[in-house]
Length: 217
Image (cartoon, rainbow, N blue to C red):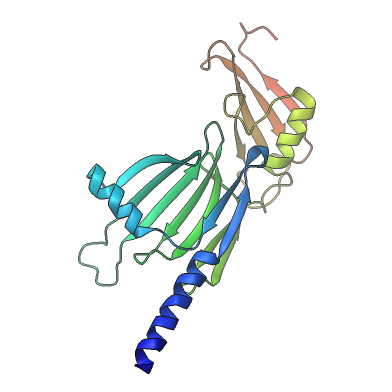
């Protein structure tokens, strides 16, 4: 009887600790997306059975969510499957990416600006302890947030809205360098395939505008 009580208590503690831990990241316009430490495998399996596939997208509470399951590698006894989840909002360049192990425990959490890793990524062990932190900002003097504030003031263009701008950054060196820059495409309001580019140098914040010869300034 005592063993049963102990097992129930331990199980309860595991569930409570897994569902109560949360970390947050702020998106554009103050929106916040939470990163829970456990993946809801039951809900995933319900959707998978209904749709008949392992990879699917859905909208929940205004968020675009993609979930998928990767099968264990063949002929590898140490290989386990894993769950992957991507969370984004419409017209936002930010994507939160989470990886869970086969038991639904969070093992990696990161953010991308479109396809580029930004800020810091975190990797966890099976007990939820952070075992690795990777800083993607070390090569740049200014962050996307800095460039956004700078461009909003200079040109009233918001790089957090992909209808207004498509931004990326370039640094071919291992540390901050005066040649690093932000490459920003500004689509035309009439035709998204017609537009011009703005280059903002990371160190100096110098702006250069690049247009086709037949484009009017």
